[in-house]
Image 1 (tube, rainbow, N blue to C red):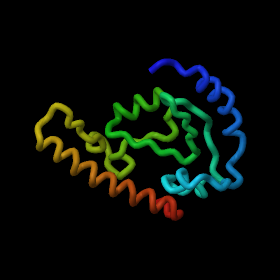
Image 2: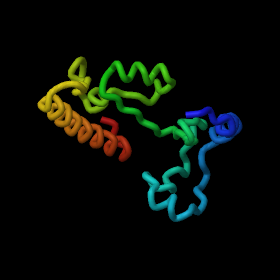
Image 3: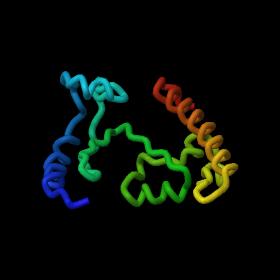
Length: 142
């Protein structure tokens, strides 16, 4: 993709501005935005943007609540290198596994059974991670 200097300039200008203070309230937005926003835009009130970044032709505004879950410790290390150290966890560790059992095997190039095992692992771990998120959002930190 060709460079987009106008987007780079916009990111440079917006980055220090959007991270100055928490979002006080959320203005009324167009229906096309509101119907697809997850979580709802009202969630932004009281949260902070951590800056502005460009990914391709899109501007992204990460929040203080971002959570990045990876399949393996190797992937976590790469995300750390890219600046996500405060927000990245191995899915298995986040869900309660320890050591080598925390990594989810990458089935690429394997047989159908390997893909099934990876699917089963991901289904189990994402359920456990969702349970943890619900507990933490409700104030239960166990």
